[in-house]
Amino acid sequence: MTKKDLIDQRLVKEAEQMVMHTHTRRHFLKESAMGLGALAMGSLLGSCGGKRKAAHSIAFDPAHPLLPKAPPFVGKAKSVIFLHMAGAPSQFELFDYKPELAKMDGQDCPPSFLEGKQFAFITGVPKMLGPQAAFARHGQSGAWVSEHLPHFSTVVDEVAFLKAVTTDQFNHAPAQLLVHTGGPRLGRPSIGSWVTYGLGTENQNLPGFVVLTSGGSFPDAGKSVWGSGFLPSVYQGVQCRSEGDPVLFIKDPDGMSRDLRKASIEAVNKANMQEYKEYNDPEILSRISQYEMAYRMQITAPEVMNINDEPQYIHEMYGTKPGRACFANNVLLARKLVEKGVRFVQLFDWGWDAHGDNASNALNIGIINKYRSVDKPVTALLLDLKQRGLLDETLVVWAGEFGRTPMMENRNGVQNPFKGRDHHTEAFTIWMAGGGIKKGATHGETDEIGYSAVSGKVDAFDIQATILNQLGFDHEQFTYPYQGRPFRLTDVGGKVIQEIIA
Image 1 (cartoon, rainbow, N blue to C red):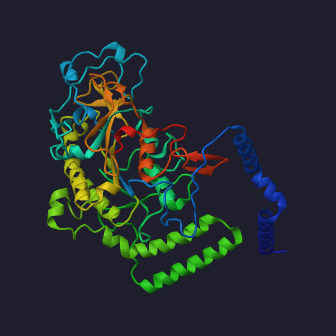
Image 2: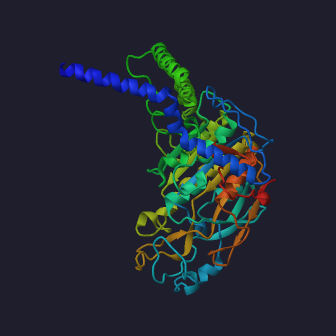
Image 3: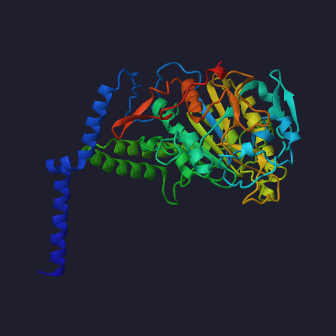
């Protein structure tokens, strides 16, 4: 027997073994033993757990996974624009006015603020750092806003501030994951994935969940903050660009006509359908749906993602720079996307980590440029949505992943060369607007130097619960079965922040 005959014989045996593994009862019992055990345990836990609320039943059609669905109750919002300032902006230079902290500027930090506390970089005894901005009251609500946001100060009566947000994560990646997935570790679906799973989208020619990044880098947690986790992969965020092609490889290569592209996709999906008939895996149907949507996106996405055709007054309003990647362009694209029926638009703007170890991240130098870059476009977004009649049904969220310390950072016990603040978990500020959120409201308060929350304390789970509530979901009942138990975005926490709901 030749060497070739031996190789052929071995390949035949391997193929026969694969068939047996796929179709025999022994293989089934071996491979599914853990799953059967988990099902049995879930049944036991369900029978012993007392009364439980009925979970929301989501009709998942793998062949049409993004078809619009009605929420369990009528929500006030239809879509969400989430603006995340990656790196965590300082509340002391923007929204949380603390004149007492100004009086302590340059003094040694009291021991009570350090004992038993854990910081990312502070060691020894740092100096207190007063606000690096002047503040004034604005609007009928009298909200305090710093001089760094002159445009935003004109629209404070449209927003609700949460002044006592807390977290238990003081490193960027885990804190960002907690905000967006409900857990500080990898593997859980992002809030945008949950929303599109529950509601689908109103435009079948575009993704239901779109992600736009700026600032020159991804958030520290990477693409996991818009991943689908254990939900079907069709619900993960689709990253688009404000510079060049909106989606990589969206154009047909040279020599490929539109008809040839259609024929190639039909051929691929024919093979996928054969595979589905053999294995009955719903992910294969989702894959077919994604191929078809990608084909439709080739026509729709370039049109929607083109800001060049916007009138000049809109460009002046947002401060856009057509042809360049920047936050202002992304904000305008977010408005265009929700206007076209996209369900969830997630913006990440990197570069807010104000440590003060160099000039670019100093509160009184480089970070001032970040304030300027977001002030005008964020204000324009609220005004533009309002003038188009979209603000009432679009929930806008502005947030970071944690706050900054009232002390100046002294990395390794040595005072930094520039003015900066370390990561802080015990208090920071976010705001929401539109989508049924109370206008001109402020909920929560910190102590006189902004170190800790003293009233209205909320966390990431409360914010997630409130977002889902505005979309028509009870966060405790909105679940997905995984590993033998129902999972939810808010894990075992979360409470709707009723004080900011209109």
